[in-house]
Length: 217
Image 1 (cartoon, rainbow, N blue to C red):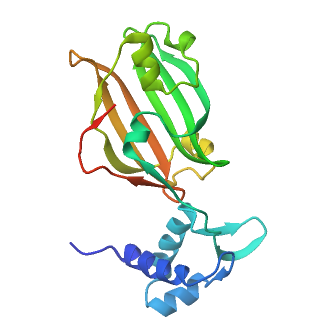
Image 2 (cartoon, helix red, strand yellow):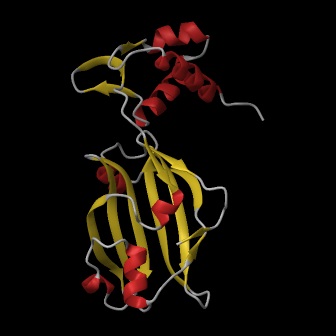
Image 3 (cartoon, rainbow, N blue to C red):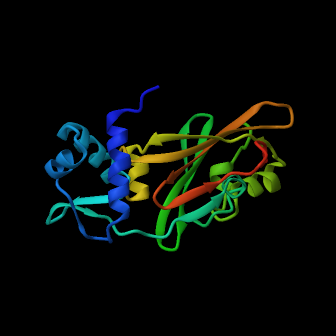
């Protein structure tokens, strides 16, 4: 299967970017088009994607495009995500339907947001959750201690685009590519009790996968 031209352009731009220091000007679209023998439209699409990913910066009084400041990338374990053991803040609990409560929090590393964790849970399985949850205890532990609920999770990983809501919490632009980790929670009888998701900034967090595909959570 042929590799799309814009993806080829992006790979070349990344090589060029890695040779440059933070905050240094990046060659203009026309020069890159001549350098790589590709159309300006192809180069533009690749540049736009690098801007969305936070690797290049534009605007705010800046002429042209520049290399974005590189920041440390935090390595996260899949098990820690599922068990809600990553440092978090701004936890909210809200009812979105008659039988659905959403618990959402921002995952942080230092003072930077690196992800958004959300869990959509059935009120009929967890009565009084919105009132009882203390917002600080890891959610799986709280559900076990309060409701005797323990499940086996099989997370699935994919890439997606940040919605305006998620983008605001991650402090990125809407439609920025993010890594999505999702899983369903079932009780001992095999009945679905909720759905959880973690959306990670790929420029701030890397996911460490276990050798086994099954994670207890």
